[in-house]
Length: 167
Image: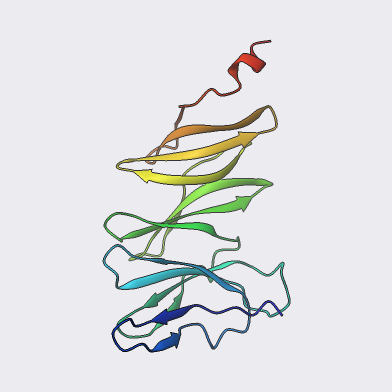
């Protein structure tokens, strides 16, 4: 079985609450919003089907309501990261045999692809107005890049293998 759940534990009352008990698939990687009101998490629907779509949900801690945010997005999500103001969720998703960074506006539910190209982003972090990501491609081992969110331009920050590429 690949059924896993996400639990909340109240330190004061010592009560445990399963927030994903209705889903019989794989629920994983919960991430609290900065204000503590929401939990974003990844969820697969079908128990035992490890190639299922990795969906994005948010759980309202106050009301207990869940919302399936990527119902109309025909791609997987991973590496969920909240914006500082909790208005956006960033994630990595595969498209055309690459992995790119995306952003979803939580008010409009609009998804924007930030990076494009023949490469894979393996991880990323927010750094103020910029994104810092670990990128690799066939002709380059993993290196760090700064990504301008508004236009997707990148600036390489690390050059660990430069001496190898120079020869």
